Length: 141
Image (cartoon, rainbow, N blue to C red):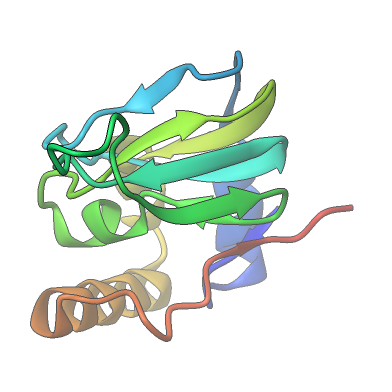
């Protein structure tokens, strides 16, 4: 289960729409400039987020973040509706659960207070161009 400052009832409904997927080593999860309608939570393995620019003297893209079990990614695009600024690639066999924005919206429309929380989070991301302070974590059982 994950925590996003939402009610327990809403989170229980949301857990039913999560989809699990496995990625092989060095498999691209998404590319920079992809539409960002998916939020990811790492169950096992590791993921690197990279920038889409290469320094001519380097053979690889710059890594901006290395993520592991319990981390989430895709947060900025999920909440802002903007295209991905980074790419994501698995570094080993990696299991994630994914939350599709449209599925999320179909559930949250039945939870007025949770929808207000989502709108506040979305506004915060769009106004600050940052996800700093959003509590988006996986709670491992």
